[in-house]
Image (cartoon, rainbow, N blue to C red; front, side, top):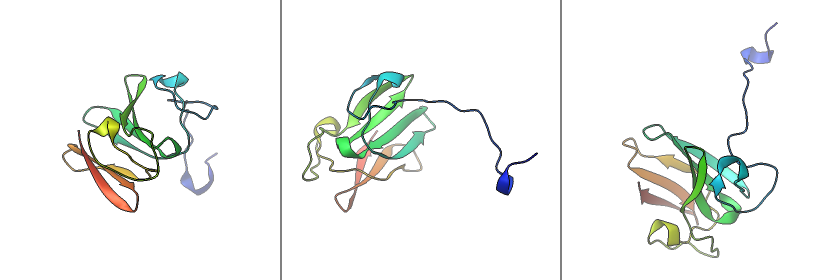
Length: 116
């Protein structure tokens, strides 16, 4: 018997994080996030980028490990600079350019670009 509206069910599983809110890099299932707004996959590298809104950071999941790709965690404003020290207040949407050489981030009512 099919599912409603032609939707097919598949088996899935947890990739990263868990039930605890917080901020923690490391092995994917031990990592902590706070208010994930969006994700985007770089199909060239296989990395998944995560907009961790309440932690004011962009996180990356690659080879079973979560790390901070951009954002210092400080809030109150957006200010460019080296990716890990940049201020990115409440990042929301993220997307790649067609060449997968830039990551676009919506934050502070603006669009920001990070070189990969």
